[in-house]
Image (cartoon, rainbow, N blue to C red; front, side):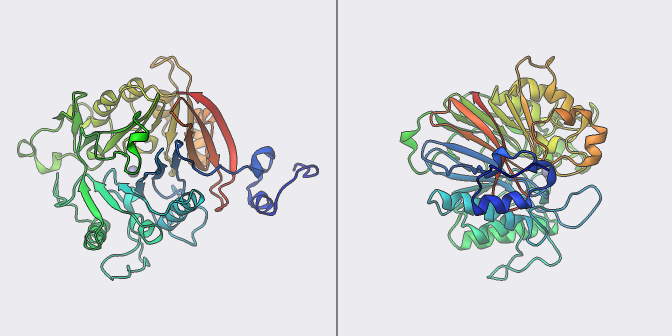
Length: 416
Ligand SMILES: [Zn+2]
């Protein structure tokens, strides 16, 4: 234990201090720090850590707001961790409350766009047996629908609207619930759109675009249709379905949407659960992440595909993106995998320095996967804060043990 004598803490910081797990108590200096509110010109990218699925929340330089995924996994199995801050709320509620705090701190009120990378429950919300019904009674609250009950979402974009038939009908119970939720939102006047691969307009700034000409979000890929780098042109990686047996149809993960964000010199990649798996060489077209990463090119920061699981974030992905910062959304015992961490840290793939951050590393993975020693963080929300203009950025780790958003560590500045 450290002595608290000489530390000046206000009551909020003191409460956070008291509730921090023991290892963090040793980091006395950052305890009283909180992230400053978003301001015009700043780009904030929050990888929210509930230990129960992916979600990222972005405030863009002109105050346009974007959420990418809002997963929710329920139940207790040995390969999962306790949900954080606690199991008293559903993961989607924690995500919505997090976004609402960041919005309110800057006088903002809504999420302009929700992008769903693909139709899996760790990105949109599985169904919990006790999930409450929505106020109109047409769907249950989980994941993104929990978020929308806390913060209004103005527009939804996914890879399969409106028919949800490619490559096969999306009819699992949680997918049907999500579709019922979108129908309800659409009836209420919210926009719903299918993701347009190759576009640089679908996620344009909505409030003051003229003030930030160096900002762009490019749609890289969805459903195996990848941007060529030429205008808005795309090419299809998957064979025509009529040439495949249904058992060989593309799976959900390689159908994920990916985007590249650019702000001045700063670049950021995120691509859901794209994988580099080729079915052991049998179906080279299944490797959608390499094509997406090569279409993207080098960035300053990249989200690691598929939670750092063994079949994604391969050497072509690492070589094409070669970022200074990797962010891994993790929660289970195999996240991140041994082979992936070795690739992310490999100086044979690219020589530059890089820092790697994960939202959670479980104890059994710490023992089995020695490279986890080299991670800059192994628990908590990961926040990228890009300064106006995009020349420099920093990384902040926020405690996810409670809702104080206490900064437990910071890194940088990095030059984009
Ligand atoms: Zn996933």
